[in-house]
Picture 1: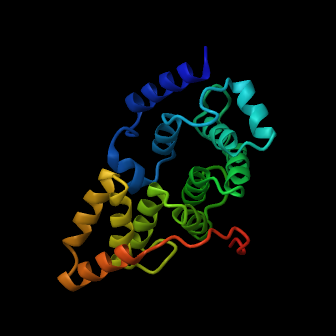
Picture 2 (picture 1 turned 30 degrees about the vertical axis):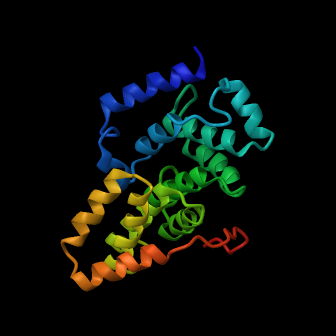
Length: 211
Protein backbone atom coordinates (compact mmCIF):
# COMPACT_ATOMS: atom_id res chain seq x y z
CA UNK A 1 0.00 0.00 0.00
CA UNK A 2 1.40 3.46 -0.87
CA UNK A 3 2.18 5.95 1.86
CA UNK A 4 -0.53 8.29 0.53
CA UNK A 5 -3.19 5.55 0.74
CA UNK A 6 -1.99 4.58 4.20
CA UNK A 7 -2.22 8.19 5.34
CA UNK A 8 -5.80 8.51 4.05
CA UNK A 9 -6.77 5.30 5.85
CA UNK A 10 -5.19 6.35 9.14
CA UNK A 11 -6.72 9.82 9.00
CA UNK A 12 -10.13 8.20 8.58
CA UNK A 13 -9.53 5.98 11.60
CA UNK A 14 -8.33 8.93 13.67
CA UNK A 15 -11.59 10.75 12.97
CA UNK A 16 -13.65 7.71 13.98
CA UNK A 17 -11.88 6.64 17.17
CA UNK A 18 -10.94 10.02 18.62
CA UNK A 19 -12.03 13.64 18.75
CA UNK A 20 -9.28 14.72 16.37
CA UNK A 21 -11.87 15.87 13.83
CA UNK A 22 -13.31 18.34 16.32
CA UNK A 23 -11.83 21.79 15.69
CA UNK A 24 -11.40 22.51 19.41
CA UNK A 25 -8.95 19.62 19.74
CA UNK A 26 -6.16 21.36 17.90
CA UNK A 27 -5.99 24.30 20.29
CA UNK A 28 -7.78 23.45 23.52
CA UNK A 29 -6.19 20.07 24.20
CA UNK A 30 -3.05 20.45 22.05
CA UNK A 31 -3.69 16.87 20.92
CA UNK A 32 -0.98 15.44 18.66
CA UNK A 33 -3.63 13.43 16.76
CA UNK A 34 -5.07 16.68 15.44
CA UNK A 35 -1.63 17.94 14.43
CA UNK A 36 -0.84 14.67 12.64
CA UNK A 37 -4.14 14.70 10.77
CA UNK A 38 -3.68 18.33 9.77
CA UNK A 39 -0.11 18.08 8.52
CA UNK A 40 -0.17 14.68 6.83
CA UNK A 41 -3.18 15.78 4.79
CA UNK A 42 -1.19 18.63 3.21
CA UNK A 43 0.82 18.24 0.01
CA UNK A 44 4.53 18.72 0.57
CA UNK A 45 7.93 18.12 -0.98
CA UNK A 46 8.19 14.61 0.51
CA UNK A 47 4.45 13.95 0.43
CA UNK A 48 4.49 11.30 -2.32
CA UNK A 49 7.50 9.34 -1.07
CA UNK A 50 7.20 5.73 0.04
CA UNK A 51 8.00 4.98 3.68
CA UNK A 52 11.49 3.76 2.79
CA UNK A 53 12.15 6.70 0.51
CA UNK A 54 10.90 9.04 3.22
CA UNK A 55 13.45 7.65 5.67
CA UNK A 56 16.24 7.96 3.11
CA UNK A 57 15.29 11.57 2.45
CA UNK A 58 15.14 12.27 6.19
CA UNK A 59 18.55 10.72 6.79
CA UNK A 60 19.93 12.81 3.93
CA UNK A 61 18.78 15.96 5.71
CA UNK A 62 15.46 16.76 4.02
CA UNK A 63 13.58 18.74 6.67
CA UNK A 64 10.11 18.02 5.26
CA UNK A 65 10.83 14.29 5.23
CA UNK A 66 12.19 14.50 8.78
CA UNK A 67 9.00 16.21 9.93
CA UNK A 68 6.78 13.67 8.20
CA UNK A 69 8.78 10.78 9.59
CA UNK A 70 8.29 12.31 13.03
CA UNK A 71 4.55 12.43 12.36
CA UNK A 72 4.54 8.76 11.37
CA UNK A 73 6.30 7.82 14.60
CA UNK A 74 3.88 10.00 16.56
CA UNK A 75 0.84 8.29 15.02
CA UNK A 76 2.33 4.78 14.80
CA UNK A 77 1.56 4.94 11.09
CA UNK A 78 3.15 1.92 9.39
CA UNK A 79 5.83 1.83 12.11
CA UNK A 80 5.62 1.30 15.89
CA UNK A 81 4.60 4.43 17.76
CA UNK A 82 7.70 5.95 19.34
CA UNK A 83 7.64 9.47 20.76
CA UNK A 84 11.39 9.53 21.39
CA UNK A 85 12.09 8.88 17.71
CA UNK A 86 9.39 11.36 16.74
CA UNK A 87 11.11 13.95 18.92
CA UNK A 88 14.47 13.14 17.33
CA UNK A 89 13.17 13.72 13.79
CA UNK A 90 11.12 16.78 14.73
CA UNK A 91 14.21 18.25 16.39
CA UNK A 92 16.37 17.72 13.32
CA UNK A 93 13.77 19.40 11.11
CA UNK A 94 13.03 22.16 13.63
CA UNK A 95 16.69 23.06 13.91
CA UNK A 96 16.71 23.54 10.14
CA UNK A 97 13.86 26.04 10.52
CA UNK A 98 10.92 23.84 9.50
CA UNK A 99 7.93 25.66 11.03
CA UNK A 100 5.63 22.62 11.11
CA UNK A 101 8.27 20.57 12.91
CA UNK A 102 8.77 23.39 15.39
CA UNK A 103 5.06 23.32 16.23
CA UNK A 104 5.15 19.53 16.52
CA UNK A 105 8.20 19.53 18.75
CA UNK A 106 6.69 22.24 20.93
CA UNK A 107 3.49 20.22 21.24
CA UNK A 108 5.39 17.10 22.31
CA UNK A 109 7.15 19.10 25.00
CA UNK A 110 3.90 20.69 26.13
CA UNK A 111 2.03 17.43 26.59
CA UNK A 112 5.11 15.46 27.72
CA UNK A 113 4.59 12.54 25.35
CA UNK A 114 7.31 9.93 25.93
CA UNK A 115 9.73 12.25 27.73
CA UNK A 116 9.79 15.15 30.14
CA UNK A 117 7.22 17.92 29.92
CA UNK A 118 8.49 21.49 29.50
CA UNK A 119 6.36 24.59 29.04
CA UNK A 120 9.50 26.63 28.33
CA UNK A 121 10.69 24.35 25.55
CA UNK A 122 7.19 24.40 24.06
CA UNK A 123 7.11 28.19 24.24
CA UNK A 124 10.54 28.43 22.61
CA UNK A 125 9.56 26.31 19.60
CA UNK A 126 6.10 27.87 19.20
CA UNK A 127 7.73 31.30 19.14
CA UNK A 128 10.23 30.21 16.50
CA UNK A 129 7.41 28.87 14.34
CA UNK A 130 5.40 32.06 14.87
CA UNK A 131 8.33 34.08 13.54
CA UNK A 132 7.69 32.26 10.25
CA UNK A 133 4.01 33.24 10.25
CA UNK A 134 2.89 29.71 11.16
CA UNK A 135 -0.83 30.05 11.93
CA UNK A 136 -1.00 27.05 14.27
CA UNK A 137 1.90 28.45 16.30
CA UNK A 138 -0.03 31.72 16.68
CA UNK A 139 -3.03 29.80 17.99
CA UNK A 140 -0.99 27.77 20.45
CA UNK A 141 0.74 30.87 21.78
CA UNK A 142 -2.71 32.38 22.26
CA UNK A 143 -3.72 29.32 24.24
CA UNK A 144 -0.63 29.50 26.46
CA UNK A 145 -1.25 33.16 27.26
CA UNK A 146 -4.96 32.52 27.86
CA UNK A 147 -4.08 29.72 30.30
CA UNK A 148 -1.02 31.33 31.82
CA UNK A 149 0.95 28.21 30.93
CA UNK A 150 4.68 28.86 30.63
CA UNK A 151 3.99 32.61 30.70
CA UNK A 152 2.02 34.92 33.00
CA UNK A 153 -1.65 34.89 32.03
CA UNK A 154 -2.28 37.81 29.69
CA UNK A 155 -5.60 37.99 27.89
CA UNK A 156 -4.47 40.90 25.73
CA UNK A 157 -1.54 38.85 24.40
CA UNK A 158 -3.81 35.82 24.02
CA UNK A 159 -6.31 37.85 21.98
CA UNK A 160 -3.49 39.21 19.83
CA UNK A 161 -2.13 35.73 18.99
CA UNK A 162 -5.60 34.33 18.33
CA UNK A 163 -6.27 37.31 16.08
CA UNK A 164 -3.09 36.68 14.08
CA UNK A 165 -4.05 33.02 13.71
CA UNK A 166 -7.58 33.93 12.63
CA UNK A 167 -6.13 36.25 9.99
CA UNK A 168 -4.57 33.13 8.48
CA UNK A 169 -8.06 31.62 8.26
CA UNK A 170 -7.93 29.24 11.21
CA UNK A 171 -11.60 29.49 12.07
CA UNK A 172 -11.33 27.96 15.53
CA UNK A 173 -8.82 30.66 16.48
CA UNK A 174 -11.43 33.28 15.62
CA UNK A 175 -13.95 31.51 17.84
CA UNK A 176 -11.51 31.37 20.75
CA UNK A 177 -10.60 35.03 20.22
CA UNK A 178 -14.26 36.07 20.26
CA UNK A 179 -14.95 33.99 23.36
CA UNK A 180 -11.98 35.59 25.11
CA UNK A 181 -13.20 39.05 24.08
CA UNK A 182 -16.28 38.52 26.25
CA UNK A 183 -13.98 38.65 29.30
CA UNK A 184 -12.26 41.85 28.14
CA UNK A 185 -12.97 45.55 28.30
CA UNK A 186 -13.25 47.58 25.08
CA UNK A 187 -9.90 49.17 25.92
CA UNK A 188 -8.23 45.77 26.28
CA UNK A 189 -9.68 44.58 22.96
CA UNK A 190 -8.51 47.75 21.24
CA UNK A 191 -5.00 47.25 22.62
CA UNK A 192 -4.93 43.61 21.51
CA UNK A 193 -6.08 44.61 18.03
CA UNK A 194 -3.39 47.30 17.86
CA UNK A 195 -0.71 44.80 18.85
CA UNK A 196 -1.92 42.38 16.18
CA UNK A 197 -1.85 45.08 13.50
CA UNK A 198 1.66 46.13 14.46
CA UNK A 199 3.14 42.66 14.95
CA UNK A 200 5.82 41.73 12.45
CA UNK A 201 8.02 38.62 12.37
CA UNK A 202 11.62 39.16 13.28
CA UNK A 203 14.57 37.15 12.08
CA UNK A 204 14.19 33.58 13.35
CA UNK A 205 17.30 33.06 15.49
CA UNK A 206 17.72 29.43 16.40
CA UNK A 207 21.12 30.39 17.75
CA UNK A 208 19.31 31.60 20.87
CA UNK A 209 19.91 29.45 23.90
CA UNK A 210 17.23 26.78 24.10
CA UNK A 211 15.71 26.62 27.62
